Length: 134
Image (tube, rainbow, N blue to C red; front, side):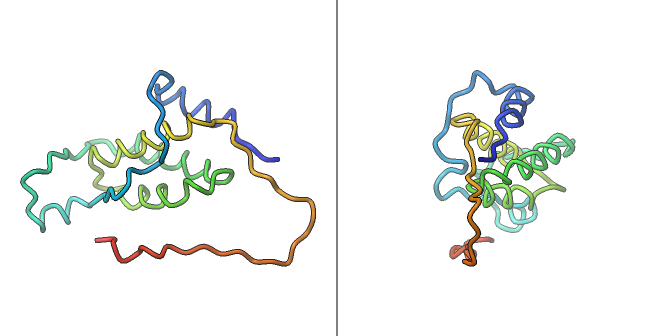
């Protein structure tokens, strides 16, 4: 059994989300994150999403979440999406990153079983919804 419980708890504590509410999914259903260029091209008057000045805390957080995907494959998709917005990030991107931490808070000691019995089966996954990416 492989887990990153201490790492997950440190991530929750460092983010100061120990007292926050839990969420059941790492990403809201049908939520799409967009770039600032996309927002400028498609005039969205209802969008109130400020650009954050310093990207370093976001980069550090996404890097830590990337490390956490080693034992939590369910985070791989959302972390991949978050990693696309490293240069001009918006408040919505940071909100989703913090939501992922709230999701991890549900079960910080989640373990991954690494079987000692060898297997010759190769299992692959793909994103069948890649066309929705703007």
